Length: 44
Image 1 (spheres, one colour):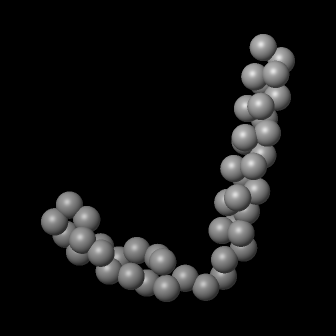
Image 2 (cartoon, rainbow, N blue to C red; image 1 turned 180 degrees about the vertical axis):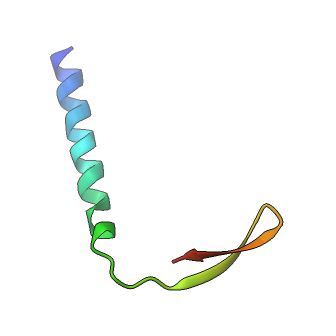
């Protein structure tokens, strides 16, 4: 069981580091997409 917990912690850290650049994005480009039949403006 300790190996499973250690592996889950490593996966969590890797996932956090993989998403880290998103926190520092300062440039957002508006984009219009169709969502459930309606046009919605989202960030790209």
